[in-house]
Amino acid sequence: MRALLQRVLEAKVVVDGQTTGKIEHGILVFLGIGKNDNLDIGKKLIDKILKYRFFDDEDGKMGWNISQANGGLLLVSQFTLMAQTQKGLRPDFGPAMPPNEAKILYEQLVDYTKSLFPNVQTGIFAADMKVHLVNDGPVTFNLEVEL
Image 1 (cartoon, helix red, strand yellow):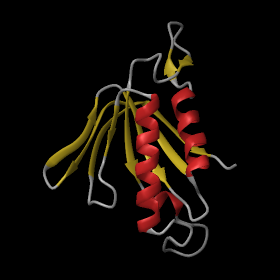
Image 2 (cartoon, rainbow, N blue to C red):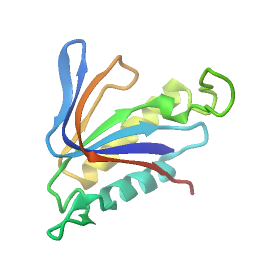
Image 3 (spheres, rainbow, N blue to C red):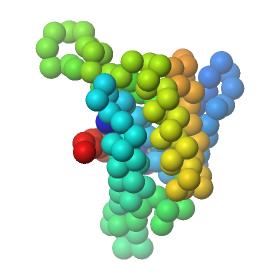
Image 4 (spheres, rainbow, N blue to C red):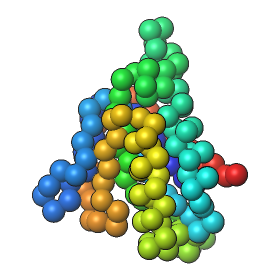
């Protein structure tokens, strides 16, 4: 499972002209789910995201996590993160979990995240999403976890 985290001043997801999720200061998370991923791996990743310190503390160092920074979390499913890109000129999406299975796991992870953190917004799984963001820094990290 992979997550691309972007520290943002604001972010939103628009589907068919309607805003489906919107946060101010916080983290925009693009979440990629692979064939061998499961709920335990996903929970480990979510736990890491919520504890990850990449907000400036009172000393101007990356010492605060999202709770300490009073930020929001915008979760967006992103199967393209699982693409193999080492060979050729076209991405191979074979490592991504099939959509029907990935949707179930994604929804479980959204529920899990909401049980731990109060300010969670989302996109819509498999929709044609328009993601608007103002990256803060820019600060972007790629996280991967395995059991």
